[in-house]
Image (cartoon, rainbow, N blue to C red; front, top):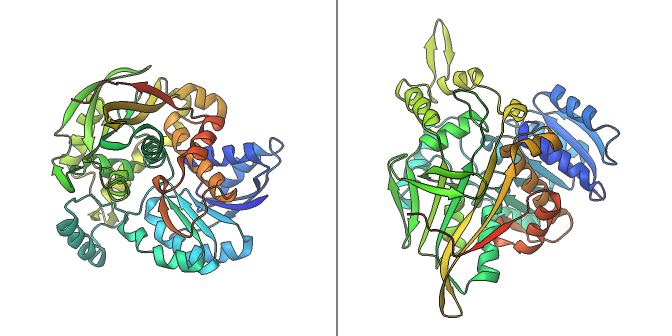
Length: 419
C-alpha cells in the first residue's frame, strides 16, 4: 500500500500510470500532476472504474521548486516519479530532499538553456576534464549523493529502457553470464513506421539535441569523441530485419564506465532511416535546432521550441505506428576461462502496445520500466540511501517485473558482432 506522486502526463507518463494501476496492491493511491491539469483529468477519467488505485490530479509547474514542495507536502507521497522533462530533474530532486521523499526519473539532467553562462562554465570545464561534449551527463545529479544518503532517501536515475533496462541487462550479464566483460554494445532499433515524412518518437527538443550531438564511446579508460553520425554500420535485428545503425553518445555509457570499470569498450548504436537524417541535417543547417532565442516580427522565439510546435506530438503516433522495436546489449568476455559472446534484448510491437495502453512502443518501453523501478523501491527490493543508476541494484527482481508487465527478455548465444 503506497501513495505515489507522478509528475508528467505525456506519452511515457501515461504508460507508466496505466501500468501502476495494474498493480493497485502496491500503487494504492496515485496523484497525476503536470502543468496542464486537463491532461491529468482526462487520463484519470479514462482509468475510472478500471482499477482499484485511487487516482487524484493536480496542477504543478515542475520548474518551480516551491510549487513542487507545496504539492508534495499536501499529498504526502512515499515516492515521486519524475516523468516530466530532464530539464526539471534538479528542481524535483531539491523538492524531494526538502520534503523527505524518495525520487526517481527516466533520463539524466540537461539544461533547457544551454547558453546560460553559469551552466556553460561548468559544462566547458567538464568537457575539458571528462572528454565528451554532450549537454547531458550525470554529474549534476551525482552531486546529490551525500544529501540523499544523509536524508535516508533513495534517488533512482534513468529508469527507462535506455537508460534503465540496458543497465539492468549489463548487471545481469555481469552477475550470471560472465566472469569478465570486455565489450558492451547497446543497440536501439526502432523498426516502426508512422507514415509522416518527419517526426520524433519522444520530446523533439530532447531527441534532436541527442541525435545531432557529437558521438562518443568509452574505450580503454577514456572517452573517444567523433562527429555526429560519422560511424555507420548495419545490423540484422530479430523480427525487424537489417537496419542502418549509427554510433551515438548516450548517458548509460557514462555510468557503466564507472560501475563496470574493467570493461574495455562501451558503445551505443541507434537505427535511423535516411529520410529522418536528411530532414534533421536540413533543419540543423538552417538553424532550427538552435536553443538560442531569435527575434521574429517583434517576438522572441527559440527555434527548436518553434519546431516542436510544428512537428507531430509523439503521444499521438500510437494509432498510426506499425512495426517493432528491438533494444538490447551484446557482450563479449570470458566465462570459466573461455571466450564468450551473449546478446540479451527485448522485442516490442507498436500496435500491441497501442491496443493495450493507447501508446506506441517507444513510450511503452520507457513507461513500463519506470513503473517497474518504482515497484522495486516501494516493495523494498531496491533499498539503499543515496543516488543510484539501475546497474547498481540487483537486476533479477527488476527483470522479473519486466517479464510480468510486458517487456520479456530474449537471449542469443554467439550473436553476430557489430562490425
